[in-house]
Image (cartoon, rainbow, N blue to C red; front, side, top):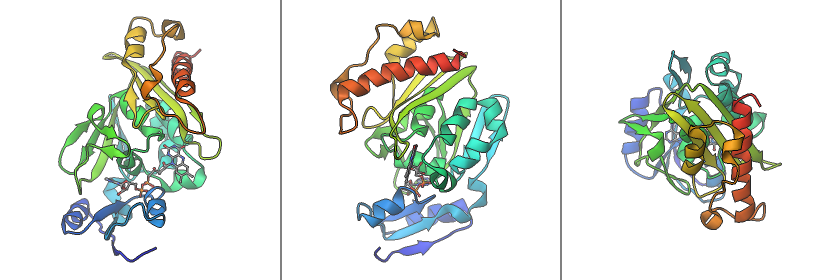
Length: 266
Ligand SMILES: Cc1cc2nc3c(=O)[nH]c(=O)nc-3n(C[C@H](O)[C@H](O)[C@H](O)COP(=O)(O)OP(=O)(O)OC[C@H]3O[C@@H](n4cnc5c(N)ncnc54)[C@H](O)[C@@H]3O)c2cc1C
């Protein structure tokens, strides 16, 4: 490690103010991604603003239409929430499938979204449910949030406060996971609600995206059969030692069909 200035404010406004104060400031949430990046010198912030002392950034509220999750809510809390499991069981299951117990007990939804790892699970739910990300200064529609590899629409020093997920009629998340880390080689979150069908995909491109052709196919017939013969162009799909672009493209179709089957009780 190298030296940096560490602060632990007790209010969001103090955290945002500290981020504005100068230098290369970064928020610290669960530290599961940031601390590793710092150890590798991929990130060298001059100021670290620990969000762990800000009580009102964590917590879950469920209304008739929406599940709202505070940015500092740990994955394990979402996974074990009876309210989330009742309202959007697929979201609780997604959180329960992230990493291992240590990662789930430290990692947060805000950190996961701000980091925008191309293989992270939550981004597919943001797109697959049409969620909104609330920050200290605005509300960002999920469809506009993920902009590139580890890049988001967040401005410098912008703090994620909470995420609002509309409650769908049916939903499921299925991932083909990396056997060691549990990150998604390909993960697909599907939902059906009064406003239509959404398909959010993670692991396959530089950032999460919606598979709109599948959404169109599923909108009149929300069954795996509606996807028959549908494939995704492999030309801009990720390829690495774990899977070629063609392999991952095939996995997108397969995981989408499995997610629809699961959402419809098949
Ligand atoms: C072994 C291992 C396995 C994993 N497996 C999975 C997996 O299967 N699926 C999956 O989805 N993820 C997985 N992860 C990632 C995990 O979910 C992390 O929790 C997540 O990537 C980062 O969350 P964090 O709270 O630790 O954020 P941190 O590491 O503290 O921060 C990450 C980034 O977000 C910024 N940030 C944090 N909070 C905020 C905020 N409120 N507002 C604005 N910016 C903020 C930080 O400044 C930093 O840039 C895994 C991680 C590890 C180490």
